[in-house]
Amino acid sequence: MGGEKAHTCGTICLKYLLFLFNILFWLAGGAVLAVGVWTLVDKSDYISLLSSSLYSASAYILIAAGVIVIVTGIIGCCATLKEMRSLLIVYLVLLLCVFLLEIIAGVLAYITYQECFPLCYQLNEELRQNLKETMQQKYQQPGEESVTQAVDKLQQEFKCCGSFNSSDWADCVWIQAAQNERLVPDSCCKSPSELCGRRDHPSNIYKVEGGCIMKLEEFILSQLYILGAVGIGIAFLQLVGMMFTCCLYQNLKEDPY
Image 1 (spheres, rainbow, N blue to C red):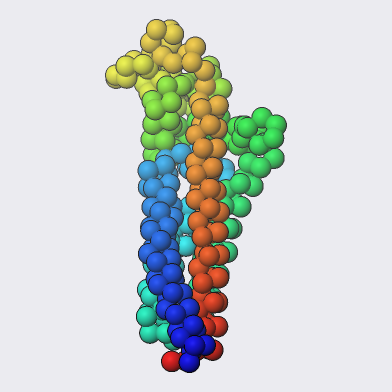
Image 2: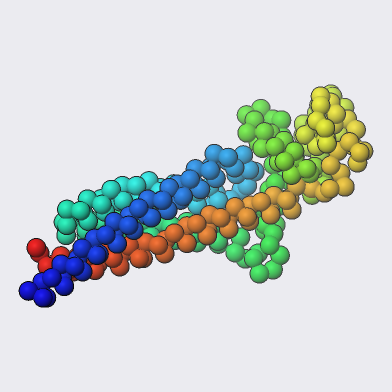
């Protein structure tokens, strides 16, 4: 009898612990989903300026993991409350899937610029050159409205002009072909207005502040840190859940009530 009571108490404690974990798991899943959606919705403009798709891929993986977390949490609660060992196995498998998804998202975010981390904390030369060519070849071109919007937003938010400096705009297809006498886009101006880009004096445009590439690098790296930290950090929370699930499964097997 004493052994049965001990098993029963242990099982009940594990049930409550696993139920508490599911609440934390849902909150963590909400955070994962929110970070992924926020990255794509609020910061998607800058993704169009990059040649690499790993940044957006990391965000999509986090969104997928967040959705799976919601489903997994429901299954976990049902399995815990109804004490169904078969459902606990399904729950354990789903926990493992979410764990792997978030680890992959975190690793993807990390390796995107891994080679630069110990040396210069800068984007590689290919991406640097790609930004310059994108600005020069696609700005204000038909069908490239998203790039134009992203460049204008980039220059205004980061208070910069051009990729490396404002002189990059001299080789821009739109600047060379336009009959508006602009030297730089109006978004380079400190106080944007129609045709304000005709004057490139430092008092009028972001000339001495430098180009946008360094500021974009810092922004992208900070976003990758967030994606990586959230993905990997929350993934290890799943390890606790898997441990509780295995213990409860074993206790239910030994103590079938």
